[in-house]
Image 1 (cartoon, rainbow, N blue to C red):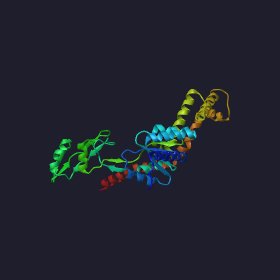
Image 2: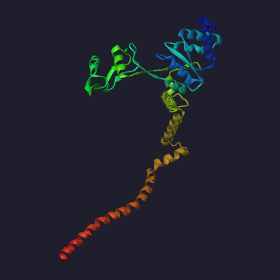
Image 3: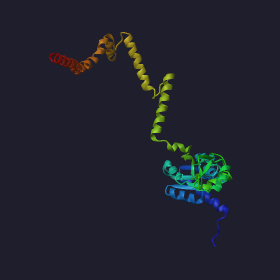
Image 4: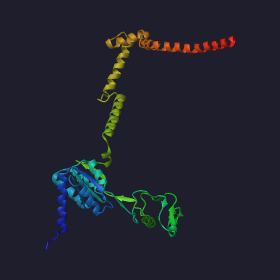
Length: 321
């Protein structure tokens, strides 16, 4: 007979496995596993096989193993995992791209019926339409204040009805109605709550940021630094171009207002002394427009003259007759 391992042996093996995974992987997804069945979890493990490992366990045991391993290795970064081990959670150790692994985990969601006493994760709305139920079930709908009518011998819901709101517990009547209608309103799977990466912990929403989002946020930060630097007259790399431009404007203003000059200011002074030079650029445009404009004006004059000649001829013919 094969001796079954004792609880102590199982704990030792679990501790060794968790410590080994902490040493081998620097990226961990902390995922909630509420209402996730064993078959569903096996499918997730199968889908992540190759570069990721899913480890479930009791929070107290995981916290103890992490704390002791951190003391043994001197790696205090592991302690950042302890506050995240709250509720029914599991650890997904991975060497792949965090965003891709998170998306792969999200694929394994399955529909589930509304069970009595369950807290609704979303709003549940019953759509209008034929239910396929016989008229004897009308009283059941009346209890839940759902407007119905009898159509071709079956009960038909007239308008959409918000049956359960998010955060509310599912009652027996609501659960029975959804079961009769064959509606499975909820879907469950591993939900990533936090991301651990080389000691840093951040929200999974960070994984959805694109390169354009990062560039936009960086540009906004640079703009704020430049604005603050200019306001307090403190030089920074972001404000340097603006400071140089403003300084040049001040020097140019002094040169224009005084007899002091330099090659770049001479051209500005020359324009200010003789404003007619501003019209030089506009003259070629007017000249270019003149040749095209003259024929057009001449044609318009010819058109205006032609009707006058025709009217004279008409008058002449009338008089000659």
